[in-house]
Image (cartoon, rainbow over all chains, first blue to last red; front, side, top):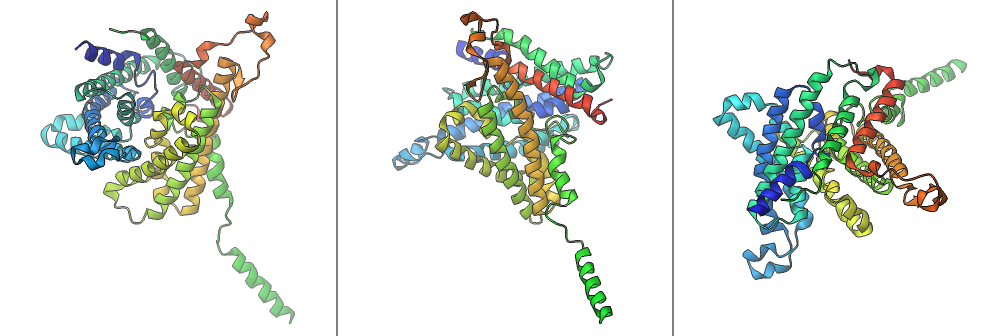
Length: 205
Length: 232
C-alpha cells in the first residue's frame, strides 16, 4: 500500500508530466485559455491515461517483452518483440481513444458535449504515449502499480492545465510587454511554476 | 526565312512559358524559408514543444534529436503525400500514426545500434517523436493536400525550423550551465572560482524549467524584431 501511495504522489508532484518532462505541452498551451476547457481536457487525459497505461502494461508483459510469450508455448522463450512496442502502443492508444469516444457519446451525451472536440486530440497528446513509455522503462511490478501511475500522471497533468488556465485568465488584465503577450508569457510562467514544483523533489513517503 | 525562324523561336518561348515549375521556384523556396522565422513550428505554430524542451540540456543530444526529426518529417511527409489519394478520410489519423510509428521505430533501432549512449540519454523521447505535434500537424495540414516534392520541401523546412530553436536553446543551456559546447570546455579553466578565478557555472540552467524560460526569451526577441507576430 505504501509503495502505491509513493508512486501516486511521485507521479503527481515530483515527476509531473508537464513540469518535469514537458509532455503534452502542445495541447497544454493551445487549450489553456479558459479554465472550463482546461478542466474538460484534463478530465479526458486522466481518463485515457488510467485506461491505456494498464492496457499497454498487459501488452508489454504478455506479448512484447523478451520471454513474454512463454504462456503460449515454451518455444517462444527467446522471442523479443520489443521493437514493435511503438507501433502497438500507439495503436492501442488510438483505438482506445476511439472506443472511449464512442462509449461516452452513447452513454453520457452531456459529457460528450463537454469533451467532444478534445477526445480525438488526445490520441496525439504526448503525455499519453509518454505515460506508456515511462511505464515500459520503469518496469512496474504489477498492474495495480501501473494503473496507479497512469492515474497519478493524469491528475498531475490536470492540475497543471487548470493552474495555467487560471493564471492566463488573470494575466489578461496585466500590462505584459507586447512581444511577450500570449505565448511568450505562458512559457515563462510555466517555467516559474516548474521551479515551484521542483521544491517537491526528493519527497518520499 | 526570317519569319520562320521568328516563329520557331516564339514557339520555344511558348514552351518555356508553359507553367512547368522549376524545382526551386520562389513558391517552393518559401516552403523552406518560412518555417525558419515567420512560420516557425515552435515559436509561432506552437507545435512539437513536448519533446523539444526535455533534451536541450546538451547540444549533442539536441543535434541527434533534430536529425531524427528531420528524417521522420521528410520521409513521413513524402509517404503520406504518395498515399494521400488512397487513405480513407475517416481513418487517416491512424494511418498517419502507423506510418510515423514505423519510421520512428526505424530511427530508434538505428540509434540503438550506432549511438547507444545518446539513445539511452534520449530514452523515451525518441518514441515520443511519434506524437510530436509538428509531424502530425504537417501531415494533416500539408502532406494530405500537396504533391510529393512540395511535401518533401515542407518537411525539410519545418524540421530545420524546429532544429534551430532546439540548437539555440541547448547552446545557451550548455554554455551557461556546464561551460562546455558539444562536451568541449569553452570557458577557460583558470576563470573558475576553484582555480582562483571569478566564474562559476549556473547550475540552474541545467534544470527543466529553464528550458521553458529560454524559449520564452527567444520568443520575446523574435517577436520584438518581427512585430507582425505579436498577439493581441
